[in-house]
Image 1 (cartoon, rainbow, N blue to C red):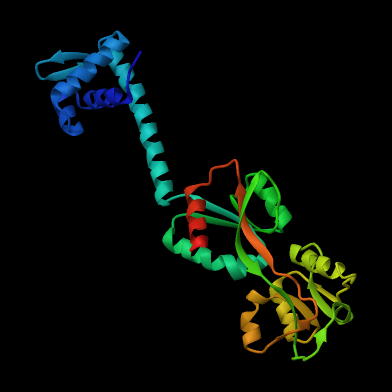
Image 2: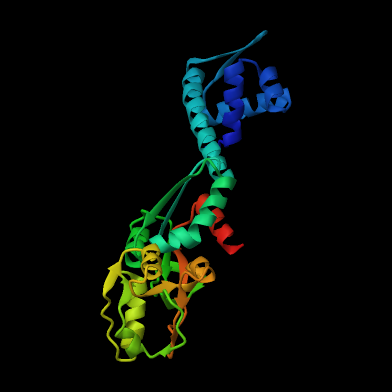
Length: 289
């Protein structure tokens, strides 16, 4: 049996109008093309679908049964085509992203604002987790894009660098002293919680020089670190790129170190085996601008 979808579309139009001439007009084809398509369909199915009359056609019992099924099938196909079109034009859909609190507020939020302005009908779902938790969410399919600390070596995940940041220590007052890591460790320090990736990066840097950090205050967010430093509670480790307003206003001052912390990279990640949705692809396009 060699029946093409186009033949069923012609049959469906003829069955709905009960007129080959009207079907031809609606489909912008000739009446002979409609007659030929119906003839081929009847031959392939080995049955009569229409009874030809002088003023049009009527469906046979077989034709009526086929019409009910084909109209339903074509309706489903049209619905699927419309849904795909909506997704591609981003008149519908969902964008699911995972990132840490600090990165969400200071880096990702402007992109979300731009995305929402361009595609207001797309639902945005933002999940705030650590890098390790975000990798789990990616692999379990709960998010499509995750922002994580680099490097990451996992064959199931593709990661692209999007940002480099510098961790610095700051204080309420300006100091000319250049601190050794050991000297700084003896100061009242304000750090993120030990479970955070940023904290682990700082701990590892100091440990590589044989220095163990024992902060006097541990906090759960970057904003709190800044507030604590501004209120002279100690020397805080913050991300320089996300502290520019406070540094420019001289609310805090950067501390000079003999061995500054190296820059670190942040990237967006997604599963290598999964095709990204149009919403995710458009969001990544914004990141690249």
